Amino acid sequence: MAALSRRARGARNEDVDCMARRICIIQGHPDARAHHFCHALAAAYAAGASEAGHEVTTIDVGALEFPLLASREAWAEQSAPAAIAMAQRQIRDAEHLVIIFPLWLGDMPARLKGFLEQVMRPGFAVPHGPARPGAGLLKRRSARVVVTMGMPGIIYRTFFGAYALRLLKRNILHFVGIRPVRTTVIGMVDGSHAHRERALERMTRIGDSGR
Image: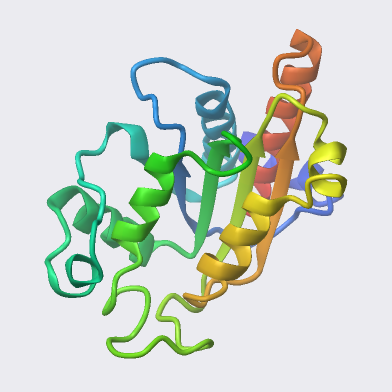
């Protein structure tokens, strides 16, 4: 009954999607030893999604054991490590991905980039052979990218051009067939407690919508 009530309230929100979905949250903060704001955002999204009837799984990138790739041959020809193969199964089973990470030196953390390089292998994300735009193997999936930062979000989007978001959206997610890709920028994360609470409430509402 509570889930139905939340959905009724969410129906007035622009982020609504009334169909229950299989959602995979990719928690991209590289430090799994502590509870960071990215972890709180992921938990808020998961809580809203689960209460609304969506099926949610989570990949904690910081807790996975995998090497960084050092050659094209390793990417294209070697088998994926066990942790990466499990993540691929979770992504393959999902209809919607949620990728959450902090902005570090203007980009995603290196560990998240290394994870995506490991995951997006030929035969899983792209066909074997020469790369061709539009030939991605992960079609019929959507995504939301959530990035946190200390600066105001409007400054990141306007002055800095949201570089990390554009890179991930166009060069990785769109390339493997994932679209639409929606983005959420949460700035001033070191600000007031009330500001952080509003961000968590917003993430719960987005999770409720499944988008």
